[in-house]
Length: 123
Image (cartoon, rainbow, N blue to C red):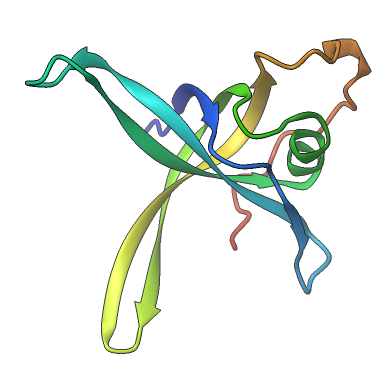
């Protein structure tokens, strides 16, 4: 089985890293990704895709990127259930395995190297 996706989009807001009780660091970002075709009005609709970044990937993205920056994200789609009282909703996230800064003025060599994200990390 294969679960891999690649998206390119713009950051909707500045990334923010949070430290969990277990000490792991995480950042949840949203990328605005325009569709490749026009709607009935002749405009391009935009999808807003949620991505979860872990550890060094989260820290580097928060340090070097800001709202409006263009990012490439390679990762996997992961579902989770959110319970709100009696309601259960399934949410799909992209768990980033690699993030490429496409509009950053920082040299790629200056960015700290990060390890690949383990596939069994859960929120």
